Image 1 (tube, rainbow, N blue to C red):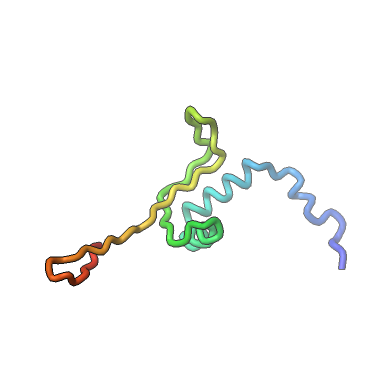
Image 2: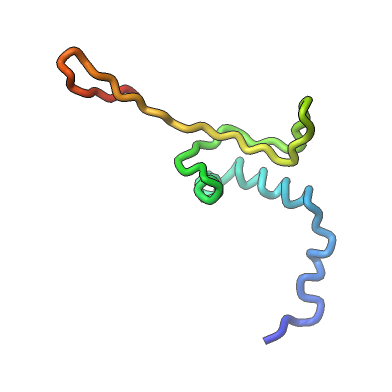
Length: 87
């Protein structure tokens, strides 16, 4: 089965910036998308903390910056040597 003539022609003008902005929007509006994305890039369990486009600093420019948080729980031993969890 072949694609109809002109199929996908509308994608000819899509630029990298367009994809960056689409991803940034999805990061801001869809927590499931952030979870899916983070799972695929080795950040399982990450929580969304912001997304920015065209971030520049002394080291250069980042087209798309996804900021995430990781929850870390510590186990504390009480005097009775019974572990307790701290939120």
